[in-house]
Image 1 (cartoon, rainbow, N blue to C red):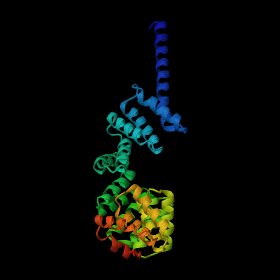
Image 2: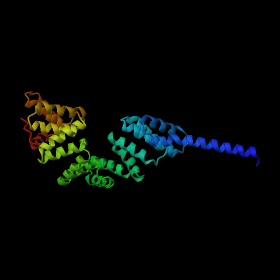
Image 3: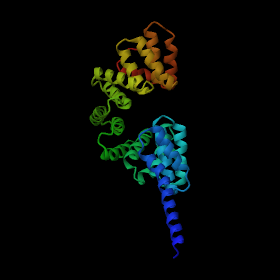
Image 4: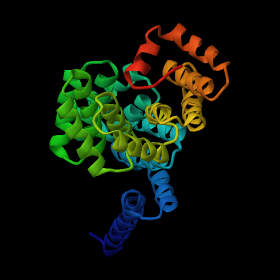
Length: 306
């Protein structure tokens, strides 16, 4: 072979290697850079570069989606997860992320098949924890416990899974098991509002520890003021202590999130009436329209309603 032909081949190979190195850089930086904005930029470059295979571009989109989701940018994150799945339907991370967002928005039927796909694809622990939440919301408590068990087998300190299993056990009547799981969840993450609020209700309803219940309610509200269960539990405890203005504020905070919540309506009505505002009766009557047994439940929780 002539020397000049060999030289051209060598130059061509060198150029190809250089291009490959340049193309590989964004995909690697998408996974490794520490700075969030630089990482998103690298993921964007990789996702838009059609010299990458579809699965690599999908992985870049899924990574960018998670970065956006973690920052609260839910809509862009959902679009990225969807785009990733169009490129690679087997991307378990994208299926998990999209399922997680749909679940958080209350779309259980849409989230479930995505989470099952993610579980089959290797995202078993987190997918099981989320599937447990779906089963819990559907009142399938045995199924919920099974899913939470699977999540906890991978990480015994998964506070959300512990809290979810506690709630399922509580609804099944396993009060000691629920208490143990709530305690473990709070030890794992003391700022998890769901665990604090759940333990508050367990202590309140079972008359276990009112002092701890109040501390849990306060901690849960501090962690997440929009947690309805936390505001309700705190409101009931405040009524028991005669803290009418504070109780009213707690129930009104719950009503901002769930305007028709009968417990919040009835509790606010009691707080108003006990503080001298007889128009609180309207709240109580409206709550009875939603739930005719609501007054008895407040009596059972030790609240003097009149």
